[in-house]
Length: 341
Image 1: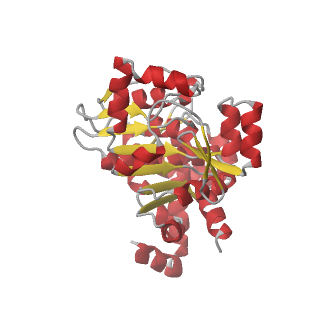
Image 2: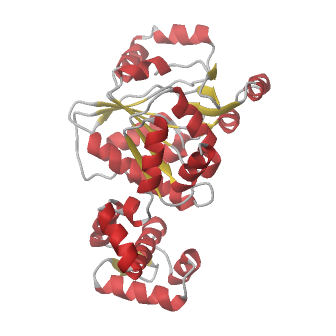
Image 3: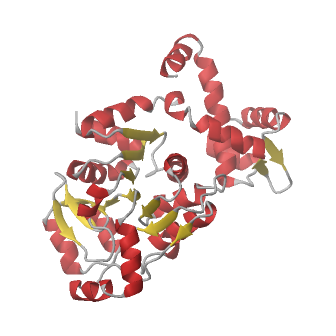
């Protein structure tokens, strides 16, 4: 596949440009539908004539549908976009970036989507779609999947779709997390994924920022203990990575805690653990659910994070432990590689 695209780039670059243009039109329509032509012209940065020509071709082929409200993808268009997604790393040459990240951190699987989610909101949606696509390939009957909260994981849940139905799968939040925005809570994300694929789910209806004495009491509750047992038996973990101070503020840590993180040069956060730039854990927020030590017993651990502003945070977490897979974007990947040259 890589060789084919290298040959096309050398002998017929206009073919790649045509494919990229059509892909960008489909991508914009999918994320913004119903969307008007003028909005597409603005978003794509193309001439009105060029956009009109692409729309006419796609409509003629049954890929998009035009209504008074705007443009929609047809089922054929949705299916085609999913197929194109598989060749995106080669089409945009992000596969080269992925190979470099693999080598730097010894990660078996790295997926890099084009763009920078720090400056382009749609790239975050693309990250979510890539994560959903990857997760669906890993699911199998009777497996237990744990997920954390966060905006990118929420995008993954929205993109998971109902094409597969696995009633024997169990989806759980990796840790408690009440107090965050409802849509971004791990429990909400777990329930949404489970509902989409016809699976089961169990939730932890408790906040995550608790005193250790309170945590120990809660662990003795029968219902909570049952959920914790399922969480610690997870076969697959999907977690996000955040910038340390941003996450500390979002989680409403105290002024004293945030000052400590700054003095400790914390740059990254995952699963309520805070890491310095060398990957050393400098702080942990007490909570109920998965601990970092539990990850050694989980077969597949997938990290999802993107944005050039999160490059240092991603590096910090990857420096602490080896992940099974990383799904990131071009902005973060390029920044990470630059930092390690």
